[in-house]
Image (cartoon, rainbow, N blue to C red; front, side):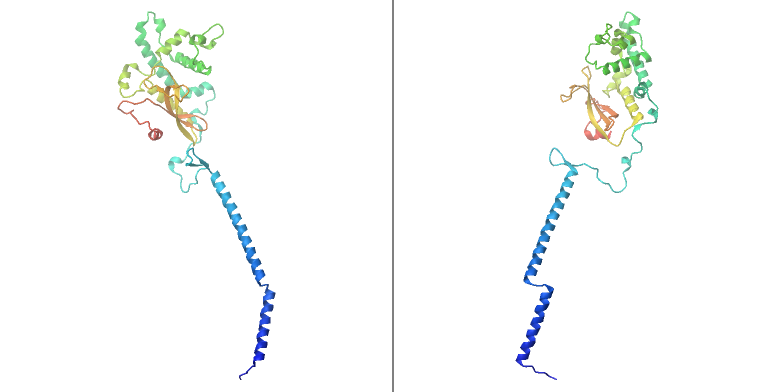
Length: 315
């Protein structure tokens, strides 16, 4: 059935539908003002979010900067903390011994026992033997044999003790006759141990190698007069103590102004003149693990080694 509505009826229905749409819009709160307020609220939230993100980003940047130190060149960045490594630790980076005295030195309590760990009986007897060889060579120049009698283990040990005690008293620049003064201004233990004449004689004759074949050894090694004793001392340092995980290598100038073919002049050092020694030292305890004397340019042979930083460290 087809229903035909007149124009009046159609207008009435359209008006009713428009009223219904208007009521629905009012109930839902949808209008131009509400839409504008919603947009403003969203805009404010976006601004707050942007400010929080910027603050968070600045904090992260500050924390990142605090983890580094800048070098003097203003380009190099040094991390304050070690990098986190993943995977297995390399074998040469695994510490197998705790730092501290080794088994051979753990039961040593007195000062003299600890000293003998480094300057042991073998070193002292080597010095005695080599010194007596030189004394025998020059004995023909003396009228009285008592003035050039040979030395022994006890006397050389006493000589080493006097030299150490003189260093403890900072007597390096003091006149030797003042040290043996008997009027109360000298050191009593010095003249009680040996006479000043004997002390000067032993210092003159003190040798660390066999002078009879020195020249042949010197053809390939500038350190021939002291190499054997020095290497024994370094070996004793290595066998008596285990260093920690952090060590450093640097040079030291031992003050010396005597006659020596490898004496160095370093104006930046306090002593300026002396013997330069490279040393590997524990960074925390300052214990010397390894030492190497700088001899300058060595003759061709097994001791002619490079002294650049990389090969020096690898040795």
